[in-house]
Amino acid sequence: MADRTAAGIFGKIFELLAKNPTEEHKAIAKEIFAETVYYDFGSYLMDAEEALIALDLAKKGIDPKYPEVGESIIYGKG
Image 1 (cartoon, one colour):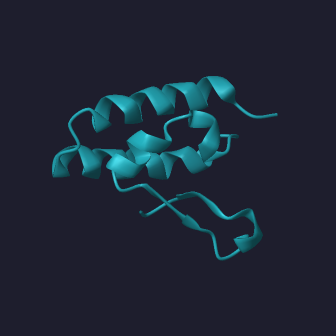
Image 2 (tube, one colour):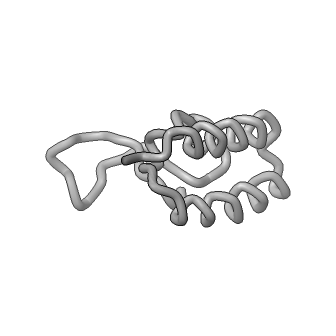
């Protein structure tokens, strides 16, 4: 079962950092993003795609693993 509460909290943190995506905020976000692997949720459940893109933690593109899906959000290093 996905941990939607944790996903929401992480999403809120990334939204706040993305309001002013300085290099310092991007570095903080990168450290926090690394911690998400210890929680039971997919990155999409944070509902923070635009924030993650602004923080260079996601990008829009064709995922080489699933090209048939078309353009989607690719999480991780943007």
